[in-house]
Length: 173
Image (cartoon, rainbow, N blue to C red; front, side, top):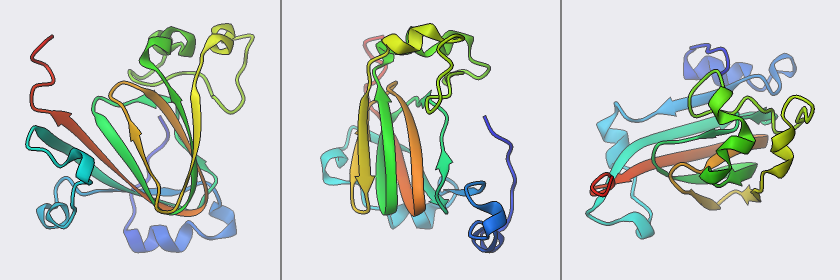
C-alpha cells in the first residue's frame, strides 16, 4: 500500500530516529531466505505441533508513529512484541462488506482509513464490529487466518510476526 524504500539496516536505524523522519520509516526484516536465522527461532509452545507448517517469519522495527493499513493475511499469525507498545484492531472476516474490501485497490486490504473514517464515503463502516487490544513488550497476540487487522505502533518498538498454515488446511475445501 505505501511507497517502498530499500536501504541498508544501518542507514534505516540512523535515519528513523531523526526528527525529520519521525513516524515515516519502519523496517521489515524478512527471515524467509535465511535458514540460520529461522533455525534460531523456537515456535511458541501452543503451535509446536507436527501438523503446523511455518510460512513466514518477519521482524518489524519502528521509531513509532507508524500504522498498517486495515488488511487480512492468508495464514494464521502471532504478533510478538519485543519492545515498545502497539494497538491492534481485529475484525472478523464476516465483516468484509462493512470494510469495503471488495472495492479496495489491492486484494486483502480495505480502502477505509480506520483512524479517521469518512462515514460519508464509507457509511457501512459504522456497522462493523471489532475487537481492540493493546500490546506491551513481552505480549503476544494470535490473529486468526482471514481476520482483518490494523496495527498502530507507538514509540520505539520491535516486533516479530510468525505466519503458518496447517498441514490439512485445504482438505475440506
